[in-house]
Image 1 (tube, rainbow, N blue to C red):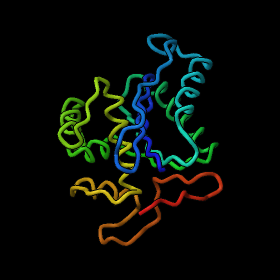
Image 2: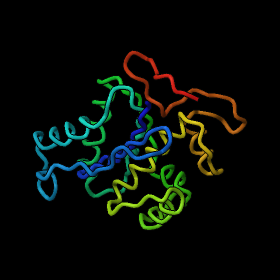
Image 3: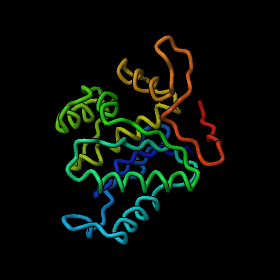
Length: 193
C-alpha cells in the first residue's frame, strides 16, 4: 500500500503519513529537546534526524517543505532541512521539494497567508486540525505527495501547484521536472493510477 509523507523540517519537525485514500497513518511532531532554546550540537542534530528518518520507509513518496529565507534561525533550520534531504537521498527515497508559498496555495489559501489562515483552510478542505503549525504544514505536504501519485479531485489552485511540481508548462507539455528528486539509482517508484 503506498504511503505519502509530508515533512516540515524544523527543531520540531512536523511529519504526517497518509495512505492513497487520504487516511492518516501517522501524525507527529518530532523533536529533540536539546535543540530547543539551546545552541545546537552535532549530537542533538543527529538525534533529531534519526528520529525523523525512523518514521520514513523505503518506497514512501515524500513532500518536504522548501527553505524559508526570513527565519531568524535559518542556519539551524537549513542544517536540519539539508540533513533530512541527504538521508532521503542516501536511502533512495524519492522526494519533492515544495516552496512554502506553494504549500499555502495548495491548501486553498493565498501563497503568503498567515499560519492561522492556513489552519482554517486545511480544516475547511480536509477536516484536519492540529495544535501544531508544523503538523498542519506536514499534512498539506502529504496531501501534495498524494495528489502527485493518486487520481484525486483538485481545485484550480491545487492543479496549478501539481502541474508546476511535475514540470508542466502552461500549455500542458511536459518539461524537465526540477523539483522531484529521484533516488540515487535514478528509479522512481511506480504509482497506481
